[in-house]
Amino acid sequence: MRGEWWKNGIQLNLRIEPIGLVLAVFYAFACWGARKLSLDQFYLPAGIRVAALLLCQPRLWPYLFLGEYAYFAQMRYPMIDKYGLTWVILASVSLMPTVAMIVRLHRRMMAATTQAWLLSVGAASAVAVTSINLALAELLWTTPDMPLLAGIARYIVGDFIGILTVAPLALLWARRNTEPAWTSRLLTPIIGALGLMILLGICTTLIPAESSTAKSSLQLLMALPAIALTCLLGWRGAAVAVPTLNLIIGLTTPKPFPSAFDQSTFTTQMIMAIAGAALLMFGSRITHYYHRYRIRDDGEKNAIKLARKSHMARENGLRERALNLRKLGDGIDVSLNEVVNWLKLQGHHEIASGLLHTATVHSRLFREQASMVYPTTLDQLGLYVALQMGGLREAWEKTARVARPRLEGDPCLLSNDLQLAAYRALSDAVSLLLEHETGQVVVRARCGRFGPQRGILVVVALLDSAQALSETTITMADEQLAGLSLAYGGVVQCRRNRIRLLLTETAIGSSNRVARFHSVKRGTADLDNSEALT
Image 1 (cartoon, rainbow, N blue to C red):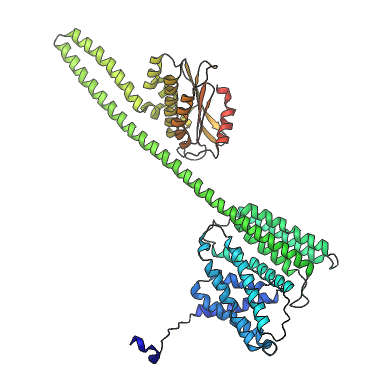
Image 2 (image 1 turned 30 degrees about the vertical axis):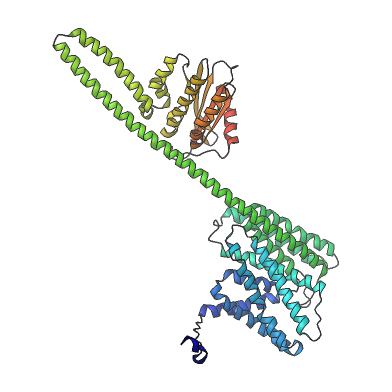
């Protein structure tokens, strides 16, 4: 029964994983080895503790506790006679659970794109561990000899530096699959910066102990490659540079005995601790904004790609409609010819001639309107022939306001998609000027290369150079032509009496692969370089 559990007892199922035992042994040896290289002002086991908690899943944390207790057991067992069994047990079992709780409380922050939470974990762990050690020493040691002010600063800074030395590398390894792959472009600056830092570290060991100022100056100079690496690579650069910086300074610190203290190096280490925290924060912000930029840039590219596909889908639909209209026109012409021939056979020559003349005029008008739906001539003979022979040219001539276009270059070197986009843009630009402006209109176009791109520059202008475009025309031009220009890698400009439009695509590879300019300024520069067109 439920109420008799105290009689029957509680059954616990304990499953021990071999990988956990191996992890515990490895962790204990890692702490032992790190302690051999450490000082109170540079305590690497604190970093091993935080790094292990970051790398391992929570279900494996009990094995880390076991490894920590084994490490403390071999180190503090000889201290029982001096400090007492109570202190040895409490000081050994309380540190790892405290740091584990701190890491656990930061779990939600770990999902963020920035790694600034690591500094919070490091600072909180250093303060908590130091506070526990000092409090237990004051309470349980018979003759406390722990220094209060200088000791607190030494131990907190030592733990914090140890965490900044190991934890960033562990976090970098844990997130290796979520970051872009390492390439030679990334490895080259890393190797160069690390080599320079190691060289400066070796130089500090060659300086006599009496020249503390020169040694401190060289140690501070090692921050320059770390700063450069952070600026170049963001968080990953800081995660490599800051641990290396701390490790070189810590390992080159004199160690006559485990609790030795070097004041000049400690001052440098405090400066480097602050600088390292700032670099990690700065690098995480760089990476954060880089991710945001990359997401936004990918979104823009996808939007442009979808707009281009939507435009081509609409054009394909218009092309099918134009072909159907052409077939319909051919069928009507055949039927009218049969009627005309029949009338001639019946002797009605005047009626047949009048009907033939009327049918010819309407057939031509019908085909002109069909070519306005989609310029099928463009698919076969190119953009310039479509502008000179299609219905668009007939419509311009009827207005008596559009001069004969001046066309330069070979449009057939461009893809059909780009030629069709230029055709639509040119048609819309001329229509805007005819509808909202007065006077004659000139049309000019040039095909060619614009740097690494190839494309077409179109200028639609008023013949009177002193007549500026109205605000209504400029606004409508931006609204109607901007989407098409962005979809095909170009820009639209309205200056004085003209509308200038640049459309581009990649000059290497398939002709129907379109690339947009990286900035409007680059497209503007290309337009300015083509001022000779106007």
